[in-house]
Image (cartoon, rainbow, N blue to C red; front, side, top):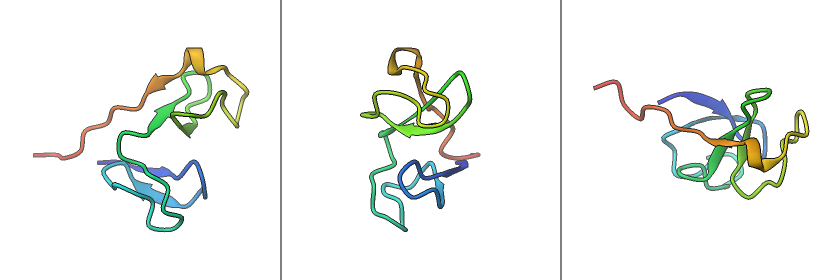
Amino acid sequence: MAIIRCPECNNEVSTSAEVCPHCGVRISGNIKMCPDCGAVALKEEPSCKSCGASSVSYTHLTLPTSDL
């Protein structure tokens, strides 16, 4: 589990959360990370809101959900 900024509302949220508790956007299985700047975005975003990288260069965000 890691804490990220929600790509929709920018509040802190766990990567293991099903939805953001602040805005309700789906988090689990619906986020990706920009390899150019490291920003987190929703999968359906066509490009990075932070640096403008295209979705072609995006990678799915895979973080451990537990330390067990």
